[in-house]
Structure formats: structure tokens, C-alpha cells
Length: 401
Image (cartoon, rainbow, N blue to C red; front, side):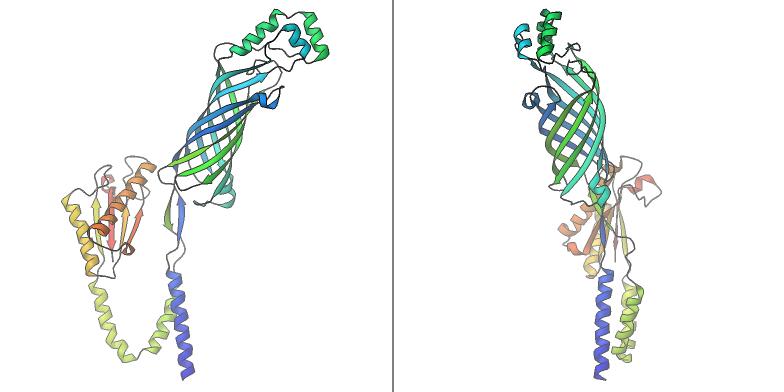
């Protein structure tokens, strides 16, 4: 008999433990589309050329704004700027004969670009909002608006003043002679394509720091030299990305309902341990208690774009929810914010619904002293519309039970 009681007690304990684990709410982090800005003040550019590597390095900056459509894909409009450099790889003899003061020059540019970005980490490993490092690739098209090419024009004039067949022939005998046939003046606009790689380190939901490296191809005329192929420059940029608005939210995971058999096992063994007379006495009281505690729902409406409880009617509704929670200490309340689909956009409405839910929860906690553990806060933006009438969906729905 003692052994039988021990076995039954053990099964009850295991059943209760399993039931508690099965009913624990499981949640997942869901991505929210959002805007972002990028500022990259630390950069360097190398323009492909024939002179020394260090002679073709320039300072470089970039700023941009973009929209992250999903965890893997984004579009960005950026403006890259500063200067590019070039040089002639000519012999000492040619320099001495022609009398060039310099065989290197620079010019200014501004390059607006539109890029498509692909987050390889999220694409291959799945979305994780708090991942420390993300690797990505991008490609895009734009324009390079070049100006201030005075140095190249000065060198070209010096060459033209001495440009005769003997000079060119002698120069070719001892070194490479390169034509500056494409020297330009004023402002020139060149179609530009680029591809690149990005690496971002997360600081928090709002900020990340990263490095971007890109290769940019454009017309052979860009560096003033005729070479018969595309001109190239390579950018390396470091800076910060700032996410605007909410980047993710928490939702209950699907398919996590507790198996009913667990509850049945608990009930069977508990009933075996409790005397029948006690069960009969407890049953009416339990049924009466359940019948007397009916759920309470209150709909708190807002005006367009509002997130504060303004009218006395709505304030009274919040108080009724608080009074219910005080009357029934074991009751809890779910507070869910909404926004109407007829105005705003997804980002604006998500923020509005979040603030509408939060303001009610804050009133319950701060004004009426309801413990935060008894309040569940959620928001739907305009993804769900509880009412057929558009304006009524500017609402926070409270369900206490």
C-alpha cells in the first residue's frame, strides 16, 4: 500500500511538472520593416592607375538612407563624395624633355547611388534580431558627377606644347607614353555601377557599426587618360547605421498548445489521492467560484494619431479594469493596441498601436498599482482590424480574466 502511494505521488509530480512546462508561453521575435540612416565619415578611395599605390589614395565619405523590407533585403540611397586621383607613368627622359612639373593630378566628385542589399547571414542562418555580426553583399547603379579637373588640364597643356613626333618617339623608347586624349573640363556626369561587401556589428536595436568595401566602374574618360577599358575606383568606408522605429516585436509561437493528455493524467491521480467525500464538497464551491468571475472587456478608443487617454469616458473604462483586477487578485489582463488601416502606413501605425497599448498599461501600473506581472501588452498596428468601422480601430482592447 505504501509503495502504491509513493508511485502515485511520483506520477502526479511528473504530470504537474510536464503540464507547467507545456503551458509556459513560448514566444518568437518577429522582424518589423523599418527605415535606417547611415553615416560613414571614415573612408579611403584607391583609384586604379599606373603610378605608386600611395599616390592614388584619397579621403572618402558617404551618407545614406534606406528601407529594410525584410531580414534579408534592403534598398539604400547613398551619396559618396570627395576626390579621385590619377597619374601618368612616364619616363624621366620624357619628363625632362617636356618639362612636366607633375605627373599626378586629382579632381572632385559627388556620386549618388541606389543599392540593393542582401544580408547573407539572415538569409542562410535565419533571422536573429540580437545577432552580433551580419555579413552582406550589395550592388547598385548611380551617377558620378565630376568637377575641378584643373590639374589634369594643366598637365595636358604642357604635353601639347611639346608634343611632336620626336618627343613621343624618344619617350616610347625609354618608357610608356600614355595619351591624355580624354582630358575634360567643367562638370562631367558618368554612369557608375558598383558591387561590394558589408560587415556590421550590433550595438543595440538602434545602432550598429560597420565596414563597407566596394568596387566602382565607370567610363574610360573619368581619369582623363585613354586606355581602352573601364576606369575603376575602390572605396573602404567605416561608420554607423541608425535604425528608425521598431525593428522587431514578440509574438506567441504557433503550435505550442499543451497536450490535453497531461491534464487528464493529473486529474486521474489527484482524484485517487483525494477522498470522494472531500471532492463532492469542493465541487459546488469551485463551480460557484468559476461562475461568479466573468471576464471583463473594455474598449478604449483614441482619436486619429492620438496615444493619450483624453476623455473621461475612457478614463473610467481604465478604472473599471483596475477595479476588476483589485477585486480578483488572481486575474490578469491583456492589453492590445490597434491602429486604423485607413490612415498612415505600416511603420507609423505599428508605433501608434504600441504607444496606445503602453499608455493603458502604464496607467494600470502607475496610477492604480497593478503589478506588471499581471499585465500582458501587445500591439497589432493595422495588421488586424477588430472593428468593421475604420475609425473604431484606433483602440486599445483590455480583456481581464
